[in-house]
Image (cartoon, rainbow, N blue to C red; front, top):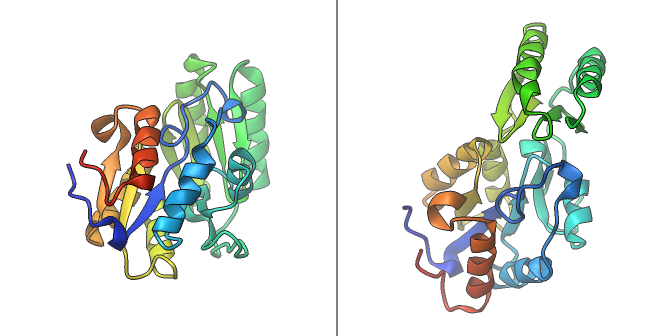
Amino acid sequence: MDALPRLADSALLLDFDGTLVDIAPTPDSVVVPDGLADTLAALRQRLGGALAIVTGRAIETVDGFLATRFAVAGEHGAALRHTADAAIERPPLPGPPHRWVETAAGLIAAWPGAVMERKARGFTMHYRGAPLAGPVFRAALSAMLTEAPGFQLLEGLMVWEVRPIGADKGTAVAALMARPPFVGRKPVFIGDDVTDEDGMRVARAMGGAGLRVDAAFGSPAGVRAWLRAAAAAPDWLLL
């Protein structure tokens, strides 16, 4: 397991679904535990502001769930807000062709229980509620992507995502760490899914740590307990 830098030298970068909150049957049914935003705000203060959510979700969606604004890299880095009160920045990346979105919406309608999540630069097709749809969605999306070289298909936990090449959690970490209040610190990235591996890799390359939820904490509840304790401890707690 990665060694943690001193808390005073750290920046904390946190995935959302499956890390801070438990995975839910649908994207909209996530439950944010009481006190989570307060814990994050307390840690942000201890870290000199260097705490961010790094997620595939839209920034506006994260704001709605937490009811408190934080620095956020949303849509895997296709949208960035470097501090809680900063404007959202969007790198010059393409959005998917409209016909792709229409085709995907038609597929979702054909599979009760499946859910589509629209984003500014891409979309996701969740099939937790329709497990047999997974291979069908993959085949259809793979065929779409042969039409345009600037996009990629990413597999997550019971989800397929279409996103532009050049937006991943590694680029998101690098972008956040290049600006105050993160610059000069060592990133500690916590995530649970394959989409988080890029963020972990960049965090390690910058002298920080990349921690997987299952290996280091066991569950999102374990992450939350560790964060609560760290908010009041002299340094990061041993894992």
